[in-house]
Image (cartoon, rainbow, N blue to C red; front, side, top):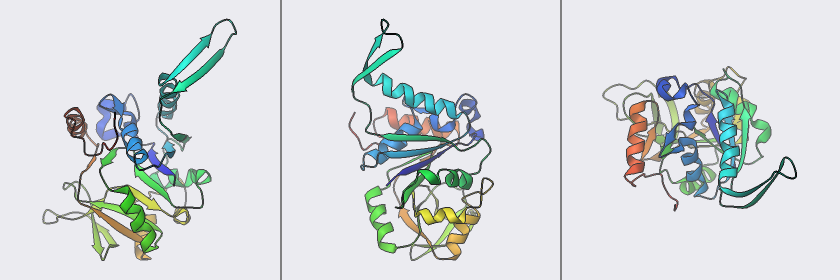
Length: 258
């Protein structure tokens, strides 16, 4: 299964950092949050990534190019001009496709644009600014068993987000959250059948609106309830919280050895 990561937005709510780089490239423990997300999926054996880039997409491409070189032994041959030989490498076992999905394209449009890089099998979709310790193996099993087109990880966050109404693990509706709600929200970490792309009209489509609402009405969207750690990085306060967890060596999303 391929892992599709939305990484093309402006990140305006964390503009202290995002004016220099895309939000997924903002660092937690000296590595971009995008790297943390990819290491998390890789720990479950999923190593084929499609990055939906847009704003400052060159930063993402250059980082991956440098990452490969910086984690390898390299010979620069100045006698044979422009000859570079890469020897043994300790970089990740990843296949990464970075796609420029446009500057102002909405989330649905970005997914639609990378359709040519997908296979016929289901794929993962998540946001490039959120970390979790959701059990991916159990979610895959859940998705296979219910037979619907889409699975969304439902999480309990703070009151900034809208609420999912869920009955017997099926998403029934989206609504704004009230103070009395404990509610579940879209935490990303989705599994989608490629047929979901048929619900997306074009670049102006917000995936979280018409496509998910249509899937909900048709009974095709299921919720994988996650009661563990989940944190998005919308603000500098969120970044600092994630940084503290990483530096304390208690990061819940870290499933790999150094």
